[in-house]
Amino acid sequence: MDGLRIAELLREKMESSRWQVVLRSLAALEAVLQRGSNQACGEVAVMFQSDPERIRACLQSPQQQLQAKAASVLRLLLGEDVPLPAAAAASSKAGSKASTVAAAKAPAADLLIDDSLSETAAAAAAAPASAADDLLGDLTS
Image 1 (tube, one colour):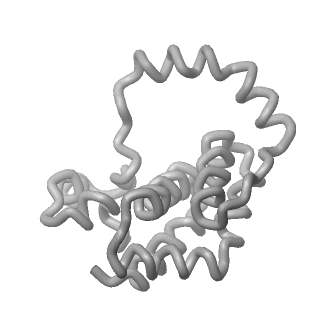
Image 2 (cartoon, one colour; image 1 turned 90 degrees about the vertical axis):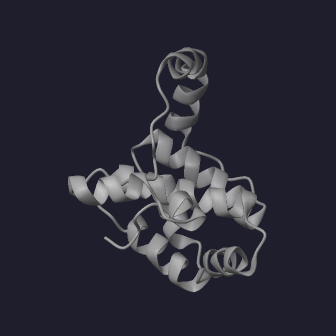
Image 3 (cartoon, helix red, strand yellow; image 1 turned 45 degrees about the vertical axis):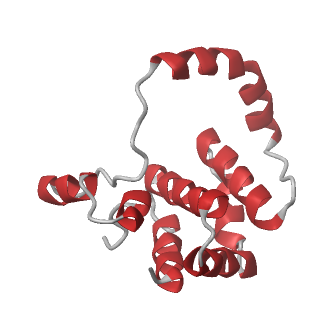
C-alpha cells in the first residue's frame, strides 16, 4: 500500500464540494490514524501533520457532522483539542440525547462508498479485493 498516494487521494476528496464526500475522507483518515500501524499509515499521518489546513477548513463548515469529525481527526493527528464554533457546540450539546436515540434506531450508513459512482463501480467498491480497498473505498474517482 502506497501511503503517499493514499494521502494524495484523501486530500483530493477533501476538496470536494459535497460535504458527504469530505466527511467520508475524514472518516477514512480517522480510521488510518486510529488503527494503522504500518509504514503506509505513518506516511499518511505525516502528510496531514505537515499540512492540516484542509482539515482545519472543515471546522468552518455549516455541517456539524463535518465539524465534529474534523475536530476528532485533528485531536488524533496533532494532539490538540479544537473548539467547535459556538453555535455547533451549543446545538450538539442540546441535541446529543435526541441524536443518540435516533442514531441507535437508524441503520449504519456506509461512509466510505461514494454514492456518485455508477452502479457497477459502486458494486465493485462494495466488494473490495483487499483490506485497503475495504478501508478506503474507491478513492480514484
